[in-house]
Image 1 (cartoon, helix red, strand yellow):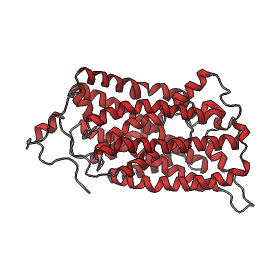
Image 2 (tube, helix red, strand yellow; image 1 turned 90 degrees about the vertical axis):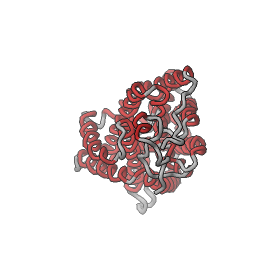
Image 3 (tube, helix red, strand yellow; image 1 turned 30 degrees about the vertical axis):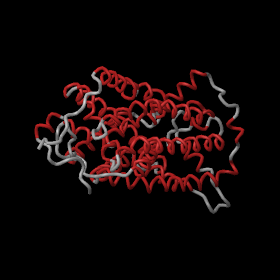
Image 4 (cartoon, helix red, strand yellow; image 1 turned 135 degrees about the horizontal axis):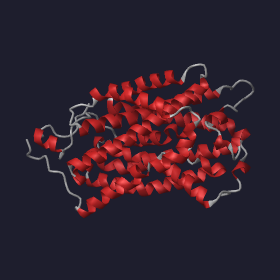
Length: 387
């Protein structure tokens, strides 16, 4: 693996948090970042559709959420352009100072940890619907161990996996959509915007918060690009691919299941189970479920990776690897105790999470931007000649 950063950094510089800490030895390309972003956006969003409260207008809510998130992305990328060699944790230290910066970084890490725990529970509940005789805890344990194994191998492995999984997803979704075409009734999409404006804007913001607003976390890996200047373009391309996939799935599921189809907990799975081509092509749900689980696994692994990487930077560790196993145990305990049953998850995703995410995705970035403007974007001390 290629090395990141310079090796001639003094111990004092690293302790002061003014230069990047070499915790990740891997590099990823801009193309891999595009695929990783697309996989992150799609993630479990094809299990629980974002903006599902909008009914037949879910695809419009997703569209509105995407454009709202572009405003947030512009703010996030503003920091990345100013500090291309620094992660979110390091940027907070530079702008807010070491003490306040670390407090804000811990808040972001909690947000990432909570989001990952919620999504791993969703994947567990989804898998349990396919194998109802197996306790959901078994799936959670297996998924947690698998994620830990992937985190150990670093960002390069995640990026390479994302390329394969997104291509697989595109092929499977295209194939299933073609098979569902005879069952498609586009009149289910009409009339357009047949909901109250407050409900539409609520659904659009919910889609902006989940999954698009979570793109904030990519500020932790942009310094690991082999060409950092291509990072913003790759993020926008990846978000756009993920957005188009979600819109196509929302239109397909509504056209097949009807305007209330998104009220079904796992609407994509319900739509796929309707495939029956001459008793030859049946039980396509197994293939699709495997695809959904693997792409969701990639997103959960990314959350795990950001949590341990961020904690290692805050604690000034030389490696994030010692944190992986303890974090798996903590996440499992939190995941099991967060929800009494899987029935609570859709309500939480549509109604609670959008409000819960406001401080992390909007308020803290705006406050950091305000302080950066007041301080005229303070710069990290240069590492040149620092050896």
